[in-house]
Each structure stands twice: as structure tokens, then as C-alpha cells.
Length: 367
Image (tube, rainbow, N blue to C red):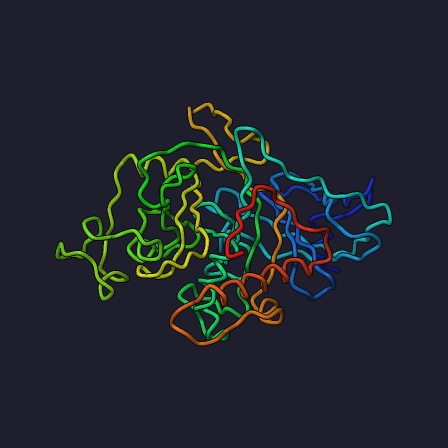
């Protein structure tokens, strides 16, 4: 008899002092693990816990419930946590929470850090693809942008996924407080570096971030003229901006963007004053390991400046549609529609059989 994947991984769970302890046998070919929880043997996972260790403690469950637990392993030495770097999930094991649930430990920032709630739609995969060298956004900003892809939810988007099956992941990020004057993309907010455009290098397994591109400048109401040119040296236009356009940033801007989380305000239209939220860029080189404190100095002289908390919540596009996401066909997204769709995302995340999500210091817009 061939052993199941769960048996090979030694995946086990134990309820202890109000939390679920999930452990497994470390794999020599793996350097990272993702634990997934679902409501039954075939349902989509609604939460992941990720770690480089051999166990996680899930302290956000509800009392006296059955949870179906599985795990996937990350191939060591691969360049990201994106598509092409993970094995298939193990067979699911049934784990039961006890009646003695305690409130989940809240996430708090230090005096020199702050917490940031961000959502990301996975690109070129239906699995969670994490934040390193990727972009994310506030729920409102990402909901507004996703409204375009949802007009035809069964058709592939430029990221080779359909909205219907797309994976949206909610993260809590701790970031180092900084003061960076003279940024061009942040709308005058000195708490962030300039936004970088990520995962547009045609290799989702090894995503890269570059100077804020033309379309992102348009969406953030940054005038691209003078800094974005086509192959003939002319300012980019709507006809060339998506295909034949290169934007330039100062070396100081690039250096800061490769150290700190970048940000741009999202307006969706260069001529519109309707503000939808913020988008962020997350530089791979300065992401803190799970055992590093944000702001920690490393032996090579660098400093880790942001850290993703282990737990992340997941919803699929079809779940958001069931909760009232508006797919009205339009070439523009008005604030009322964006708020309706952001509310559909929040309801979908809240539907998970978990204790309420918490990430203090969250940014709230469109209220």
C-alpha cells in the first residue's frame, strides 16, 4: 500500500490550551511550508499559516469545530514563493478544536513600526503567491481594480486567471516607520518609498520590480511626461504606454524602493478626483524572516524593513460574487460601486469559520 502524502509528511494536529498545534516531519528538499485549513475534504482553504519551521500554532479557530488540514512544501533554493516553487498539497487530515478556545492574540506594532492590512490577487496561479517582489493594495483599491476583471468573470485576465476562480489573500504586514521626503508616487506621504511595478517580467517564478510604469502613474495621477518615453524618445501615450514605454526613476528613488514598502494612491483615472485607496510594493531583499524583528540589522549591513504575519485569510472570486460583488459592465468605476465591492470582499473574509480578523493600524477609505 502506498502511503498518503499526509503520512509521508507526518502531518498531525493536537488541541492544547485553546489553540491547534499542527506539526509535520521536515523535508530535506523543502525550506518552507504552508498549512491550509478548509471546512471539508474538498472545499477551498480559507486560511494559510506559513513557516520555515516544522509546526504552527493556530490560535484563531472557533470552538468545537472540525477543520480539514493539509500542507504543501516549498522547493528549497527557488527564487520566490510564487508559481512553480511548490509541491502538491498533502491529503487532508481532520482536526477538531476544543471547547476551551481563547481569544486570538492581537497583532500590535512597536513604537518604531506600524501594521498594514493589504490584499493581493494571485497572478499566473490560483494558489497563494505571497508578497515578495509583488504588489498589493488596500481592500478598497484592489476591489476597484478587480471590478474591471470581473465584468466577464469566466474569461482570462492578463494574469492568466479568471476572476471567478481567482485567489485573493488578506495579509497583515508590520513595516518599519520611515521618513522619506522627495518621493514622486506617494502623493506627499513620506511614510513610504516610491511605488514599484512588479511581476511584469514574464517570469512569475522569479518576479522582479521596476520603476513605476506608465499605466500605474496614470492611475495614481502622476504626470508621466518627461520620465516615460517610447522607443523613439517621445512621451508615452495611451497607444504606446502599455507596449512601447520605459519609465525612469532616480537612483535615490530606486534605492529607497528596494529597501522600503512603496506606495501610490489609486484614482483609476488621470482626470478623476475619486480616491479609491492605496497600492503597495514589497521589496524581496528586505523582507524579514519569521524570526527577525522588523528593523533588525543583518551581517551584510542590510536591514529588514517589513514582515508578513504567518496567518493570511483567503477568498475566491466566486465567493465574492455570491456576497454581492457588482459586475456591472462599465469602463469607469465609481466610488459607490468600489465601496460595494470592497464590502463584498470584507464579508467574504468574515464568513470564514475563524475568530474575527485583526490587523491594527489598518487604512480605511471610502467611508
